[in-house]
Amino acid sequence: MNTSTRFPTFALAALLALMLGACAPEVGSDKWCANLKAKPKGDWSTNEAKDFAKHCIFK
Image (cartoon, rainbow, N blue to C red):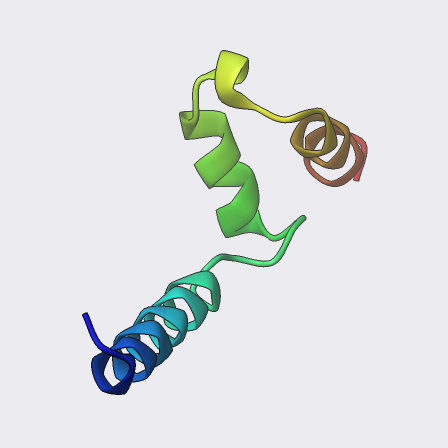
């Protein structure tokens, strides 16, 4: 792949990543809580577990 085709490919990949990241619900929202409840507990990060307790259990 030469330099003239690398940049557009990278730019498209970066744009796609930003678009997909913008679709995530805000931490603590009802949708975020529901999505985390549906996710297996073993796949939760430490931060997700703390945020879930703070925003979804102890409102």
